[in-house]
Length: 236
Image 1 (spheres, rainbow, N blue to C red):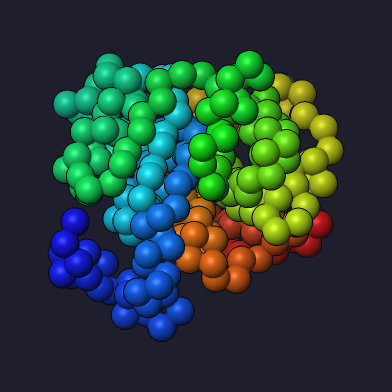
Image 2: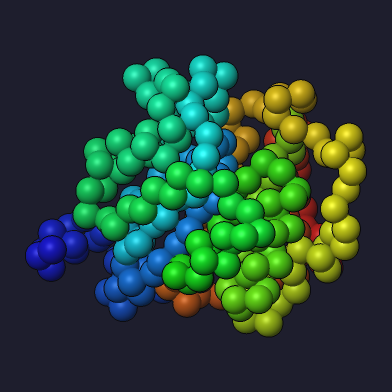
């Protein structure tokens, strides 16, 4: 890729004093794995692709359904019933074809988690169940990889960075897996579309700051209440 093309495409990032040419190079050398191609995974993928992350992988085993389209904005009507990873590949080809995009059409479980996560520098948890969340956390601890965590429900969202430069992790915040009946989900309780866009964009920002080696808050859970428009932090 020619340097003048790179500069023109990413100039508005390069103009930021804290990023510059060296920071953009770091972003372009980063390898990131997003787990989940739904409401959170969609904006994370969009903004990491737009920023020029060098290697961007997406793990998901689901297919696009009509009810996804209110929030999963990388998918469209033409992608209905396609796998979400192939739909994401369509989006990537149109949005930034220069990126090394790696669709991983598989359900991450205890047998394959380490193998799937190992090649990547930063793991982004955009999944929708606690079993996978705890597995990702455990695997990141074993492999010493940072984990960007986000969750959404109704009008509310959460965000945290785990296991980054010796910081705390998911078990320090939630020591045990909650019973399934106590876990809210979009299928039963719903979610307004812009919420995952907000939380996913915040997650992407944390990934980019890590990639560019900028300061990142750790040992804090950011709480977002979009109904009452309140933002707060919980130290743990």
